[in-house]
Length: 289
Image (cartoon, rainbow, N blue to C red; front, side, top):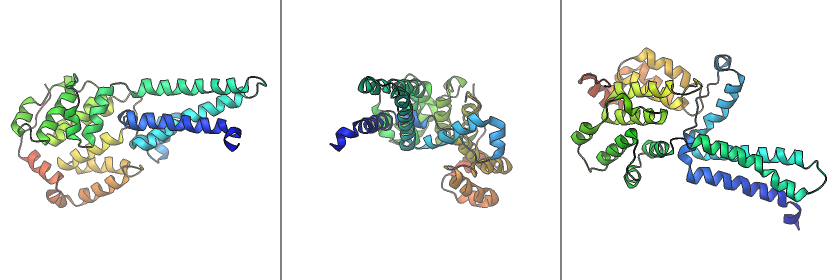
């Protein structure tokens, strides 16, 4: 009896669960690719405007696929509830109109799907790269994207299928490899793994510059902080750190980096940055062709 009296609520909850599972299990990489940097600062609000400030507030939570999928599901449910609130004012055909109220929500889901799955192949490779899932990368079909091909070679090296020299010989050093924002993110990671710090820095700048609405990227700023730290640009690194300290998800990283900036002697003993700094100091810079 209770289910019968609250069946509309049950259907709405099931709808939200379906949307959440769709994004979280099938397209988590597309969700995470939508993350934007949000800074708790009045200057940020004044520079970007209220609409972008509010939008980026929610977009920052796409840092995790689970939270992003939940927000996407809630957005669709809110649209459905608002639609039903309007349609329910009509006295007749209640059941039919309740079904119709899902149409705007499905349209919103379609818009999200169309936007989120652009360059789906690249975002899926990027998702695996960020998590170091090298075997999963090699199990995918060989990609057409140049950036993804470099990710495959890195995965081959990480799993011992090719040597370090073989990976370096095939590494793409042309501007063509930075064909999209996701490609630039991936190549920044690949170059960082390869010890090409300046190349990683340039790729991150390219990724930041390619954001359509001139928003900032926490991921890019994180990498730029690391490269500035390794190359000895401590004042530049401190500038990025001061921004990241005002965020939710990058605050802990920023605090760890501030300790290194204020005590540069600690960098040499750092398991990652110490090795990269030694490589940087003993090799010549490599330029894009």
